[in-house]
Structures are given as structure tokens and as C-alpha cells.
Image (cartoon, rainbow, N blue to C red; front, side, top):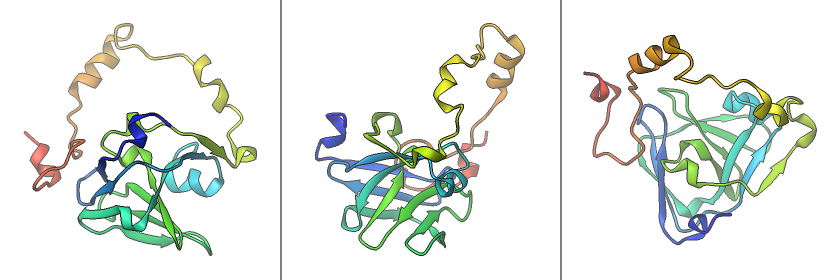
Length: 166
């Protein structure tokens, strides 16, 4: 884990639309990459990336997450409005999706799990062509035209997606 992850501070985050927000107090616990099929389906990605959090260290500061009983041992929490995956919840702790944190890039995994279910091509991502804005003017123009309506990566007093629209 990085030195910043172990600092006694708070970490904020939430869903894409801003309807659900949270704050985690203190240093972060174990950060894991899980390749199991449940995590793949729940996140819509090649793996789940989670931070272990004690229930008494997280405060839901805006809205409520909806939960789905995804197995006999846990529930998946998500935003009912925009669908953002937020948690994988057990009896004594929950795992919070790393990408839902405002400062997600500062949170580094320390363990990988369910390796047999990892997509076989995943380790070759660095060999796949990279689309460059400079090399593809059409793609650069497209990116310049995109206006994001998602919640910013920081706490706000109030928020609705329309706040982002011109």
C-alpha cells in the first residue's frame, strides 16, 4: 500500500450521478483485485477492485445505496439512479469499489484473488494499440465534444446531474 493510503485521513466518494455519497474515516485497509465471475458481472469489467472497510469507518453522506443479495454470504450495493457499483457487503465488513472514490488513482491494490477466472488476455493489455488524440483528429474532435454530467470528484453541498448541463 502507498504511504498515502495508510495516513489517518478521510476518503470521500460516491456514484456517478451524485445521488449516493460516502466518507471513509482513517487509513484504508486491504485493497484487492478480484477476478471472480461475480465481480466481473457486478462491475461490468474484467475484475473488481475493492478496498476493505469496517462498517464503523464509513458514513453515507448523501442518499442510500440499493442492495442485491448476490450470494449466500454477501450483498452488492449500488446506486439505484445511475447503477454505479459501490460495495460488496459481508457480515463484519464491506468492500468499497476503488473507482467510486474521489481520489481513486491514489489507491493501489496489494493482493489479487480468483486468478483462475482472470481473462487470459488481461496480462497483454500493454501490447494492444493505443488510440492517440494526436494521431486521430476525428477521435480528438469527438472527445472535445463530450460534456460530462457526472458528479465531480469532490463533495458538494447539493447535486443533480442537471447542475452540469450548460
